[in-house]
Image 1 (cartoon, rainbow, N blue to C red):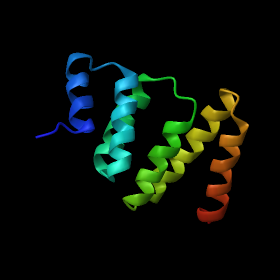
Image 2: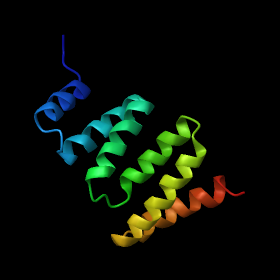
Image 3: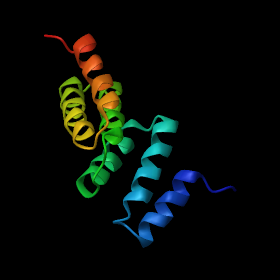
Image 4: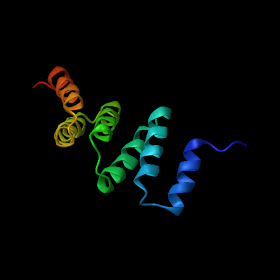
Length: 106
């Protein structure tokens, strides 16, 4: 039986649990497969350890949206805006602002 990419990342994480590159790689694999709760868990672990530039916050927000957790999605987008601006990614920040203004207006 072939080993899945998720299993490979999990094995790598066992030997290096603090490796943010492995965490992000596993998150991308969960995103591809639609494993929303696992994606949220791994992204939260990643964001607790990494100096993300904004991308992971968008991934997290979309995962929260997929699981119906709109309040948490909004918070993730807002944090993503702050982080993207801090790292000099105004286009990403604007993209998140547009999502918030279009879908999250009160």
